Length: 366
Picture 1 (spheres, rainbow, N blue to C red):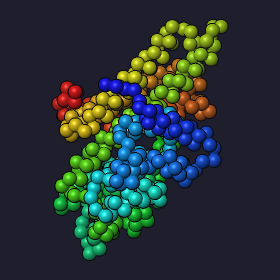
Picture 2 (cartoon, one colour; picture 1 turned 120 degrees about the vertical axis):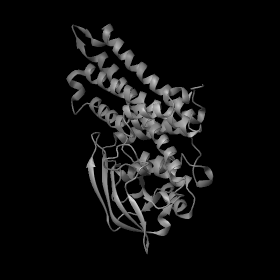
Picture 3 (cartoon, rainbow, N blue to C red; picture 1 turned 30 degrees about the vertical axis):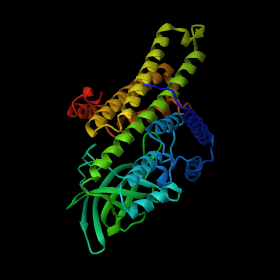
Picture 4 (cartoon, helix red, strand yellow; picture 1 turned 45 degrees about the vertical axis):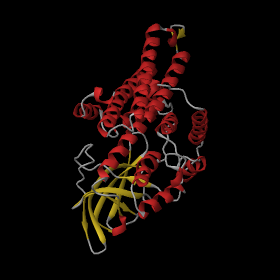
Protein backbone atom coordinates (compact mmCIF):
# COMPACT_ATOMS: atom_id res chain seq x y z
CA UNK A 1 0.00 0.00 0.00
CA UNK A 2 1.32 3.44 -0.95
CA UNK A 3 1.17 5.77 2.05
CA UNK A 4 2.55 8.79 0.13
CA UNK A 5 0.25 11.79 -0.20
CA UNK A 6 -0.69 13.17 -3.60
CA UNK A 7 0.09 16.80 -4.41
CA UNK A 8 -3.56 17.76 -3.80
CA UNK A 9 -3.55 15.99 -0.44
CA UNK A 10 -0.32 17.73 0.62
CA UNK A 11 -1.87 21.09 -0.28
CA UNK A 12 -5.00 20.23 1.70
CA UNK A 13 -3.00 19.13 4.75
CA UNK A 14 -0.92 22.31 4.64
CA UNK A 15 -3.93 24.63 4.27
CA UNK A 16 -5.95 22.89 6.99
CA UNK A 17 -2.98 22.83 9.35
CA UNK A 18 -2.44 26.58 8.94
CA UNK A 19 -6.14 27.36 9.47
CA UNK A 20 -6.49 25.22 12.59
CA UNK A 21 -3.26 26.54 14.11
CA UNK A 22 -4.32 30.14 13.49
CA UNK A 23 -7.71 29.46 15.07
CA UNK A 24 -6.11 27.78 18.07
CA UNK A 25 -3.81 30.77 18.63
CA UNK A 26 -6.60 33.36 18.26
CA UNK A 27 -7.75 34.26 21.77
CA UNK A 28 -10.77 36.14 20.38
CA UNK A 29 -12.10 33.43 18.07
CA UNK A 30 -15.74 32.44 18.65
CA UNK A 31 -17.85 29.59 17.30
CA UNK A 32 -19.18 31.70 14.41
CA UNK A 33 -15.68 32.70 13.32
CA UNK A 34 -14.51 29.09 13.63
CA UNK A 35 -17.30 27.83 11.39
CA UNK A 36 -16.76 30.58 8.82
CA UNK A 37 -13.13 29.52 8.56
CA UNK A 38 -14.22 25.96 7.77
CA UNK A 39 -16.72 27.28 5.21
CA UNK A 40 -14.23 29.54 3.45
CA UNK A 41 -11.65 26.75 3.14
CA UNK A 42 -14.26 24.39 1.68
CA UNK A 43 -14.20 21.92 4.56
CA UNK A 44 -18.00 21.88 4.91
CA UNK A 45 -18.30 20.53 1.37
CA UNK A 46 -15.21 18.34 1.38
CA UNK A 47 -16.82 14.88 1.91
CA UNK A 48 -19.72 15.36 -0.51
CA UNK A 49 -20.08 14.61 -4.21
CA UNK A 50 -19.76 17.47 -6.67
CA UNK A 51 -23.35 17.03 -7.85
CA UNK A 52 -24.45 17.69 -4.26
CA UNK A 53 -22.43 20.89 -4.06
CA UNK A 54 -19.32 19.34 -2.50
CA UNK A 55 -15.73 18.69 -3.51
CA UNK A 56 -15.66 14.89 -3.71
CA UNK A 57 -13.16 14.25 -0.93
CA UNK A 58 -12.77 10.72 0.40
CA UNK A 59 -11.93 9.16 3.75
CA UNK A 60 -8.21 9.75 3.11
CA UNK A 61 -8.79 13.51 2.90
CA UNK A 62 -10.97 13.37 6.02
CA UNK A 63 -8.10 11.65 7.83
CA UNK A 64 -5.80 14.56 7.00
CA UNK A 65 -8.37 17.08 8.27
CA UNK A 66 -9.01 15.18 11.50
CA UNK A 67 -5.30 14.69 12.20
CA UNK A 68 -4.87 18.47 12.03
CA UNK A 69 -7.99 18.85 14.19
CA UNK A 70 -6.44 16.57 16.81
CA UNK A 71 -3.06 18.33 16.72
CA UNK A 72 -4.75 21.66 17.53
CA UNK A 73 -7.47 20.33 19.89
CA UNK A 74 -10.23 21.58 17.59
CA UNK A 75 -13.62 22.41 19.06
CA UNK A 76 -15.83 23.13 16.02
CA UNK A 77 -18.60 20.51 15.47
CA UNK A 78 -17.03 19.08 12.32
CA UNK A 79 -17.48 15.43 13.29
CA UNK A 80 -21.10 15.69 14.41
CA UNK A 81 -22.37 18.17 11.85
CA UNK A 82 -20.47 17.34 8.67
CA UNK A 83 -19.05 13.83 8.96
CA UNK A 84 -22.08 12.28 10.65
CA UNK A 85 -25.28 14.27 10.12
CA UNK A 86 -24.17 15.72 6.78
CA UNK A 87 -23.03 12.41 5.34
CA UNK A 88 -26.29 10.81 6.42
CA UNK A 89 -28.32 13.57 4.75
CA UNK A 90 -26.31 12.98 1.58
CA UNK A 91 -27.19 9.28 1.55
CA UNK A 92 -30.96 9.44 2.06
CA UNK A 93 -33.39 10.43 -0.67
CA UNK A 94 -36.01 13.15 -0.59
CA UNK A 95 -36.37 16.90 -0.73
CA UNK A 96 -36.24 17.39 3.04
CA UNK A 97 -32.79 15.82 3.32
CA UNK A 98 -31.57 17.64 0.21
CA UNK A 99 -32.70 21.03 1.56
CA UNK A 100 -31.09 20.30 4.92
CA UNK A 101 -27.81 19.37 3.26
CA UNK A 102 -27.86 22.63 1.29
CA UNK A 103 -28.25 24.54 4.55
CA UNK A 104 -25.23 22.73 5.97
CA UNK A 105 -23.07 23.34 2.91
CA UNK A 106 -23.75 27.08 2.83
CA UNK A 107 -22.89 27.36 6.54
CA UNK A 108 -26.32 28.60 7.61
CA UNK A 109 -27.28 25.49 9.60
CA UNK A 110 -25.59 22.99 11.89
CA UNK A 111 -26.77 19.45 12.53
CA UNK A 112 -26.18 16.71 15.07
CA UNK A 113 -26.94 13.00 14.81
CA UNK A 114 -28.31 11.89 18.19
CA UNK A 115 -27.42 8.22 18.54
CA UNK A 116 -26.95 7.11 22.13
CA UNK A 117 -29.52 6.78 24.89
CA UNK A 118 -29.59 6.14 28.66
CA UNK A 119 -28.67 2.59 29.70
CA UNK A 120 -27.94 1.39 26.15
CA UNK A 121 -24.15 1.98 26.13
CA UNK A 122 -23.08 1.83 22.47
CA UNK A 123 -26.18 0.04 21.10
CA UNK A 124 -27.42 2.89 18.92
CA UNK A 125 -29.26 0.42 16.65
CA UNK A 126 -31.83 -0.32 19.38
CA UNK A 127 -33.43 3.11 19.97
CA UNK A 128 -35.77 3.36 22.92
CA UNK A 129 -37.09 6.63 21.49
CA UNK A 130 -40.52 6.05 19.97
CA UNK A 131 -42.16 7.78 17.01
CA UNK A 132 -45.91 7.53 16.58
CA UNK A 133 -48.09 8.94 13.84
CA UNK A 134 -50.26 11.91 14.73
CA UNK A 135 -52.63 14.30 12.99
CA UNK A 136 -49.75 16.72 12.39
CA UNK A 137 -47.33 14.03 11.26
CA UNK A 138 -45.23 12.41 14.00
CA UNK A 139 -44.90 12.55 17.78
CA UNK A 140 -41.49 11.66 19.29
CA UNK A 141 -40.84 10.69 22.90
CA UNK A 142 -37.54 9.57 24.42
CA UNK A 143 -34.09 10.69 25.52
CA UNK A 144 -30.66 11.03 23.92
CA UNK A 145 -27.38 11.32 25.79
CA UNK A 146 -24.01 13.06 25.36
CA UNK A 147 -24.63 14.56 21.93
CA UNK A 148 -21.37 16.39 21.24
CA UNK A 149 -21.65 20.05 20.17
CA UNK A 150 -25.47 20.03 20.17
CA UNK A 151 -26.41 23.63 20.96
CA UNK A 152 -29.74 25.44 21.02
CA UNK A 153 -29.45 26.45 17.34
CA UNK A 154 -28.55 22.93 16.16
CA UNK A 155 -30.91 20.88 14.00
CA UNK A 156 -31.17 17.33 15.31
CA UNK A 157 -31.42 14.03 13.47
CA UNK A 158 -32.97 11.53 15.88
CA UNK A 159 -33.29 7.78 15.24
CA UNK A 160 -36.51 6.35 16.68
CA UNK A 161 -38.42 3.10 16.57
CA UNK A 162 -41.51 3.27 14.34
CA UNK A 163 -44.10 0.66 13.30
CA UNK A 164 -42.22 0.41 10.00
CA UNK A 165 -38.74 0.00 11.54
CA UNK A 166 -35.72 2.26 12.14
CA UNK A 167 -36.92 5.80 11.57
CA UNK A 168 -34.89 8.99 11.18
CA UNK A 169 -36.43 12.35 12.03
CA UNK A 170 -35.30 15.94 11.53
CA UNK A 171 -36.12 18.12 14.54
CA UNK A 172 -35.71 21.90 14.20
CA UNK A 173 -34.26 24.02 17.02
CA UNK A 174 -36.82 25.18 19.55
CA UNK A 175 -39.41 22.51 18.74
CA UNK A 176 -42.16 22.25 21.34
CA UNK A 177 -41.39 19.48 23.84
CA UNK A 178 -37.65 19.53 23.04
CA UNK A 179 -35.22 20.34 25.84
CA UNK A 180 -31.41 20.29 25.96
CA UNK A 181 -29.23 20.25 29.04
CA UNK A 182 -25.64 21.19 28.18
CA UNK A 183 -22.70 19.91 30.21
CA UNK A 184 -18.93 20.16 29.77
CA UNK A 185 -16.90 17.19 28.62
CA UNK A 186 -13.57 16.32 30.30
CA UNK A 187 -11.68 17.85 27.36
CA UNK A 188 -13.43 21.21 27.55
CA UNK A 189 -16.09 20.79 24.87
CA UNK A 190 -19.88 20.78 25.32
CA UNK A 191 -22.25 17.82 25.13
CA UNK A 192 -26.02 17.86 25.52
CA UNK A 193 -28.53 15.51 27.08
CA UNK A 194 -31.75 15.75 25.11
CA UNK A 195 -35.32 15.05 26.17
CA UNK A 196 -38.09 14.56 23.60
CA UNK A 197 -41.37 14.99 25.46
CA UNK A 198 -44.07 14.53 22.85
CA UNK A 199 -42.26 16.53 20.17
CA UNK A 200 -44.61 17.17 17.24
CA UNK A 201 -43.05 17.31 13.79
CA UNK A 202 -44.40 17.29 10.24
CA UNK A 203 -44.75 14.19 8.11
CA UNK A 204 -41.95 15.43 5.83
CA UNK A 205 -39.52 15.46 8.77
CA UNK A 206 -39.24 11.68 8.52
CA UNK A 207 -36.31 11.02 6.18
CA UNK A 208 -34.98 7.89 4.53
CA UNK A 209 -36.44 4.40 4.40
CA UNK A 210 -36.98 2.60 7.75
CA UNK A 211 -35.97 -0.67 6.10
CA UNK A 212 -32.60 0.73 5.01
CA UNK A 213 -31.83 3.49 7.53
CA UNK A 214 -30.01 1.19 9.94
CA UNK A 215 -27.50 0.09 7.31
CA UNK A 216 -26.84 3.70 6.31
CA UNK A 217 -26.26 4.80 9.90
CA UNK A 218 -23.93 1.81 10.45
CA UNK A 219 -21.71 3.01 7.61
CA UNK A 220 -21.83 6.60 8.89
CA UNK A 221 -20.79 5.43 12.36
CA UNK A 222 -17.90 3.38 10.98
CA UNK A 223 -16.68 6.46 9.11
CA UNK A 224 -17.04 8.57 12.26
CA UNK A 225 -15.01 6.03 14.24
CA UNK A 226 -12.18 6.32 11.73
CA UNK A 227 -12.41 10.12 12.01
CA UNK A 228 -11.95 9.72 15.78
CA UNK A 229 -8.96 7.43 15.18
CA UNK A 230 -7.45 10.09 12.90
CA UNK A 231 -8.08 12.80 15.47
CA UNK A 232 -6.36 10.66 18.10
CA UNK A 233 -3.38 10.19 15.76
CA UNK A 234 -3.03 13.96 15.46
CA UNK A 235 -3.31 14.43 19.23
CA UNK A 236 -0.75 11.67 19.93
CA UNK A 237 1.60 13.15 17.32
CA UNK A 238 1.52 16.55 19.03
CA UNK A 239 1.79 15.05 22.52
CA UNK A 240 4.84 13.03 21.46
CA UNK A 241 6.44 16.19 20.02
CA UNK A 242 5.80 18.06 23.29
CA UNK A 243 7.32 15.18 25.25
CA UNK A 244 10.46 14.94 23.12
CA UNK A 245 10.91 18.72 23.36
CA UNK A 246 10.56 18.56 27.14
CA UNK A 247 13.07 15.70 27.40
CA UNK A 248 15.56 17.85 25.51
CA UNK A 249 15.17 20.89 27.76
CA UNK A 250 14.66 19.44 31.26
CA UNK A 251 18.04 19.02 32.96
CA UNK A 252 18.86 16.54 35.70
CA UNK A 253 22.28 15.45 37.00
CA UNK A 254 23.88 18.07 34.77
CA UNK A 255 22.42 16.80 31.48
CA UNK A 256 19.12 16.88 29.54
CA UNK A 257 17.01 13.92 30.67
CA UNK A 258 16.53 13.09 26.98
CA UNK A 259 20.12 11.89 26.94
CA UNK A 260 19.21 9.01 29.28
CA UNK A 261 18.78 5.85 27.23
CA UNK A 262 15.85 4.49 29.22
CA UNK A 263 13.83 7.62 28.48
CA UNK A 264 14.81 7.48 24.81
CA UNK A 265 13.42 3.94 24.71
CA UNK A 266 10.14 5.08 26.22
CA UNK A 267 9.81 7.86 23.63
CA UNK A 268 10.59 5.32 20.89
CA UNK A 269 7.83 3.04 22.22
CA UNK A 270 5.41 5.98 22.03
CA UNK A 271 6.38 6.54 18.38
CA UNK A 272 5.89 2.84 17.56
CA UNK A 273 2.40 2.88 19.12
CA UNK A 274 1.53 5.99 17.11
CA UNK A 275 2.72 4.55 13.79
CA UNK A 276 0.95 1.22 14.40
CA UNK A 277 -2.25 3.16 14.94
CA UNK A 278 -1.73 5.14 11.75
CA UNK A 279 -1.15 1.97 9.72
CA UNK A 280 -4.22 0.19 11.12
CA UNK A 281 -6.38 3.26 10.51
CA UNK A 282 -5.21 3.51 6.89
CA UNK A 283 -6.02 -0.20 6.44
CA UNK A 284 -9.52 0.35 7.84
CA UNK A 285 -10.00 3.31 5.49
CA UNK A 286 -9.14 1.05 2.57
CA UNK A 287 -11.93 -1.30 3.74
CA UNK A 288 -14.71 1.29 3.80
CA UNK A 289 -16.16 0.00 0.51
CA UNK A 290 -15.87 -3.66 1.52
CA UNK A 291 -18.93 -5.73 2.53
CA UNK A 292 -20.42 -4.43 5.81
CA UNK A 293 -19.07 -7.19 8.07
CA UNK A 294 -15.50 -6.89 6.75
CA UNK A 295 -15.69 -3.10 6.94
CA UNK A 296 -16.98 -3.15 10.49
CA UNK A 297 -14.36 -5.62 11.74
CA UNK A 298 -11.54 -3.53 10.21
CA UNK A 299 -12.94 -0.37 11.82
CA UNK A 300 -13.37 -2.11 15.19
CA UNK A 301 -9.75 -3.33 15.03
CA UNK A 302 -8.53 0.18 14.27
CA UNK A 303 -10.50 1.69 17.15
CA UNK A 304 -9.39 -0.99 19.63
CA UNK A 305 -5.74 -0.39 18.71
CA UNK A 306 -6.23 3.39 18.78
CA UNK A 307 -7.73 3.16 22.26
CA UNK A 308 -4.79 1.14 23.53
CA UNK A 309 -2.23 3.44 21.91
CA UNK A 310 -4.00 6.57 23.19
CA UNK A 311 -3.89 5.27 26.76
CA UNK A 312 -0.24 4.27 26.41
CA UNK A 313 1.02 7.45 24.72
CA UNK A 314 -1.01 9.67 27.04
CA UNK A 315 0.12 8.01 30.26
CA UNK A 316 3.76 7.85 29.12
CA UNK A 317 3.71 11.54 28.24
CA UNK A 318 2.33 12.51 31.64
CA UNK A 319 4.88 10.33 33.44
CA UNK A 320 7.82 11.68 31.42
CA UNK A 321 6.72 15.25 32.08
CA UNK A 322 6.36 14.64 35.80
CA UNK A 323 4.38 17.33 37.61
CA UNK A 324 4.65 19.64 34.60
CA UNK A 325 2.37 17.29 32.65
CA UNK A 326 -0.55 18.13 34.95
CA UNK A 327 0.01 21.89 35.10
CA UNK A 328 -3.00 23.77 33.70
CA UNK A 329 -0.71 26.24 31.91
CA UNK A 330 1.00 23.45 29.96
CA UNK A 331 -0.80 21.72 27.05
CA UNK A 332 0.23 18.10 27.69
CA UNK A 333 -2.61 17.54 30.14
CA UNK A 334 -5.17 18.89 27.68
CA UNK A 335 -4.03 16.45 25.01
CA UNK A 336 -4.27 13.62 27.54
CA UNK A 337 -7.85 14.70 28.33
CA UNK A 338 -8.78 14.76 24.63
CA UNK A 339 -7.30 11.28 24.12
CA UNK A 340 -9.26 10.00 27.13
CA UNK A 341 -12.52 11.29 25.65
CA UNK A 342 -11.74 9.85 22.21
CA UNK A 343 -10.92 6.50 23.79
CA UNK A 344 -14.54 6.18 24.91
CA UNK A 345 -16.33 7.72 21.94
CA UNK A 346 -18.25 5.15 19.88
CA UNK A 347 -17.03 2.30 22.07
CA UNK A 348 -14.25 1.43 24.46
CA UNK A 349 -11.70 -1.30 23.77
CA UNK A 350 -13.81 -4.13 25.19
CA UNK A 351 -16.74 -3.14 23.00
CA UNK A 352 -14.68 -3.15 19.81
CA UNK A 353 -12.90 -6.38 20.65
CA UNK A 354 -16.35 -7.94 21.08
CA UNK A 355 -17.44 -6.50 17.73
CA UNK A 356 -14.37 -8.06 16.11
CA UNK A 357 -15.16 -11.43 17.65
CA UNK A 358 -18.77 -11.30 16.45
CA UNK A 359 -17.58 -10.46 12.94
CA UNK A 360 -15.15 -13.36 12.71
CA UNK A 361 -11.97 -11.78 14.03
CA UNK A 362 -9.32 -9.71 12.29
CA UNK A 363 -8.83 -12.35 9.60
CA UNK A 364 -12.28 -11.44 8.28
CA UNK A 365 -11.06 -7.91 7.46
CA UNK A 366 -7.77 -8.83 5.79
